[in-house]
Image (cartoon, rainbow, N blue to C red; front, side, top):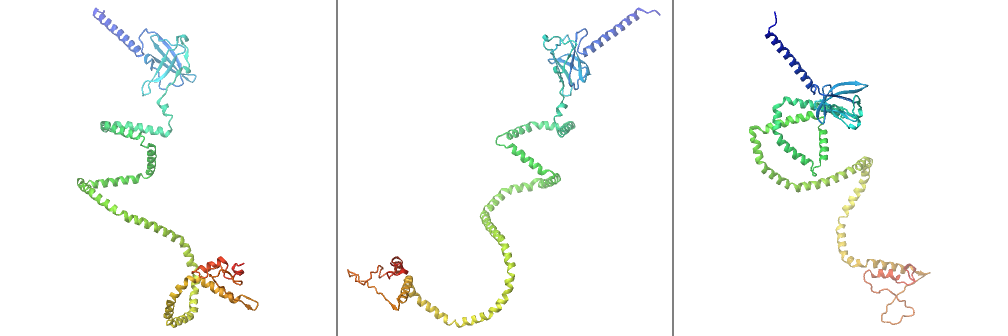
Length: 425
């Protein structure tokens, strides 16, 4: 059957459609590579120490503008070698620069190119050395600076943060309340950085407090349960008993304050008594060893007490008889002593002079020359202007007052001149 004009026309249309589709597919493929058909391509090779997540198809940029893409990533001589195709005839010189930068936080990478100075000449088929390239910097490498415990804690925090996806309503409420919370947080931050706030001391105290809680989690849990039960008990009947108690609290506090003020004086006395008691208790404590030693050493003398008592019994009986006989004499002796009191009172000022007189009288009878006793009498004649040949002038006062004769004796050497026992010459 010979083809008709209609079938030939349909074949031509189908063939044209296929050609157009092929051209559109080719354009789409080349456009996906970032270039148009027929556009000049420059191949750039660069050597890196680490390329990270860079892979073929990654973008190549210059000043943030896409100028090509990575065509291959290979390992040559132990170093990653990246081959890049730049479009529109973008030149690359020998002193150029290539760096692998982050395209997003999801570890996507791209290559940033800087052509360099034309004076250095075109790069051509040469390779940019490592010294002119910058390797990638992954977040994972940044986390390697932390110790294992910190990395584990960070990973736990990330997992918990990811778990917030299941708490949409709660997160929504938190975000709604965040403005007021941030205001309070700003006030707290301002207070913490104030010069009047000793933040280091507060942190040290908080650290010591948290150490005290370590190992007591069960006790704290029980305490919280008890506190919950207490608060529920306080909230019984709509909190009316608590409200009534709070209403009466001012009067109660005033009465308690008055009572405490009245207790100041007794407490002061108690403090003073306690201080005295402490001193006495200390003295008693110090004396206790001596008292114990006395009791221990007193056993031997106390055993001898019965024998002493038996030996003293006859003497005590005789003494009892003597005291019985002296009962009649005792009142008379008391009367005699009472009668002797007035004259003794008069003679009391002359007590030392009487002693001097007795001493001189005693010397009157003891001083002698061989078998001869001599008595010298001194006559005081104030009216006489001359001294008799055998008269001795006495320098003492012939009428001394009480106590003066004793002083004159010590001053002038006594009544008898030349007495060696009296200091005479």
